[in-house]
Image 1: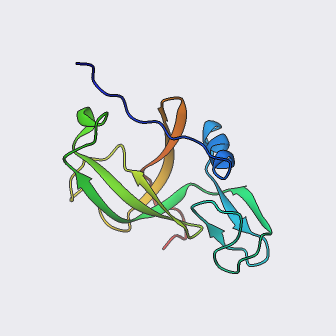
Image 2: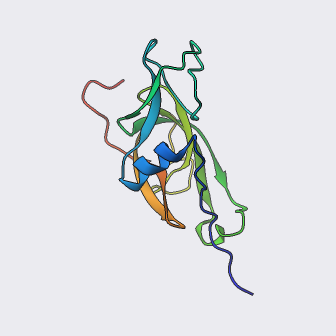
Length: 142
């Protein structure tokens, strides 16, 4: 029996600019021009002020570990990686993204809440999927 492969994300018209940016190794989010709020997931209007004057912009790719779970029973295609952390990462710009943590042991001692993280990308079925790895704290960061 063949080993299943990881499912690859499928772009939609709303998410295509996000995936176009990840293909270039960049993380882009939408930002509302009137209220200056960044947000995710993509939508045609700002969830803060409801303006439709929104634009896709590059963001730092830096954030902090907000919370996580260590998955020990992976879905098909992820068996060889178990256990692996699934995290909620709070970006410097405000929005939170769900992503895997890489380059760190899947152990609570290694995954300290509020630890600094930075984006990295992994090819998954031809799509560059954002993941996060531990980062050194930035000067003047909290």
